[in-house]
Image (tube, rainbow, N blue to C red; front, side, top):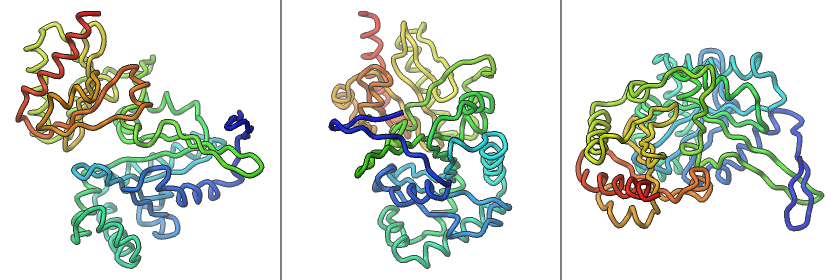
Length: 335
């Protein structure tokens, strides 16, 4: 595979070792993941026994959403590696770690020590979190945000079926980024699929023979009563608009469907994201009391529609939510 840019031909680069790929991810983490992130090179900072005999390649903190920061164990892999003898068992160990409170406590202590001993990381952490209570912040974050980021330099044919089959582990916790490097004599180009910022939105709910039946409870498992109340209020709003509107639970979201999907509900531990098929400016004209997030061109291209995400953290001002869902619904009625 080659890439052509400015009349130059770039050939795909093959990493000699996994360590070479890992170090590029470390060095370019801000470029790949954004300025409001911190990537800690785990293997060079923390001994393997911290996670019960295994160690991820990185610890990744995403503070781009101050109300809902995210923590990731990172596994960097070459696509040439065996999936079932190498990648699968490594990720499986991370699932076990997230179920082990003793190991989580040990990791918090190790990370706290590491951050305090590295002034650059410590200052960046305080700048992005706005808190001096780093130990408590780490404890709460790792308890409430349990993600695994698999960064790989090419596609693995086994991944779609595994994500589809193990919905409660791989399907919920693992996010996959493919980062490829292309070179010519002097220059380098990186391609990322999907963009990191779009990772929550561009995840295909492909139904296969192995797909288990997904219900609302799949999405509401292990969320607070507040989130459940928000979801019930969304359901009530939908039925008040049209009793024939369908709530369609899929692996990564619950869609709201008329003749086609008019919105998508993503349930998180601290909020619900409502992705509505309307232009951002139209949503902002109506929604004044909930945060509205702009979405990249690639996300809007993926959904083949202008759209934006509304972040709902409480059951107040639901007249705004009803108005935007109604507006999206009316468009489908006119088609």
